[in-house]
Length: 79
Image (cartoon, rainbow, N blue to C red; front, side, top):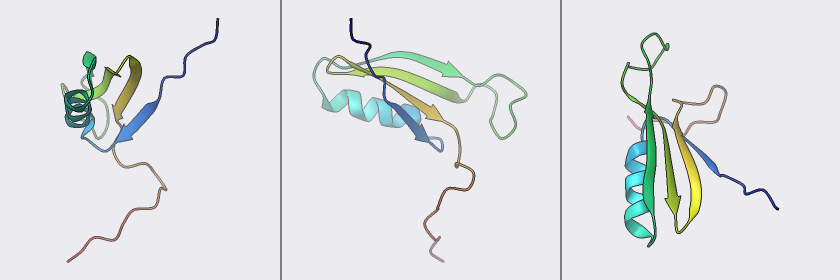
């Protein structure tokens, strides 16, 4: 049996919104599970969305609200 690859998407704080959008665009798609941050996680509000697992046309995907990735390039902010 060949193992399936589960893509993992990193968001600052838009994982649930993205999963809702993606599942609205593809047939046979649904949200499977939403996990929330517990109290005491630095930089994250208790109860805010941590991960969202969803399927797009049968393909499982996980999205994470991990905040800005440390050291990753960021576009310049316009003033």
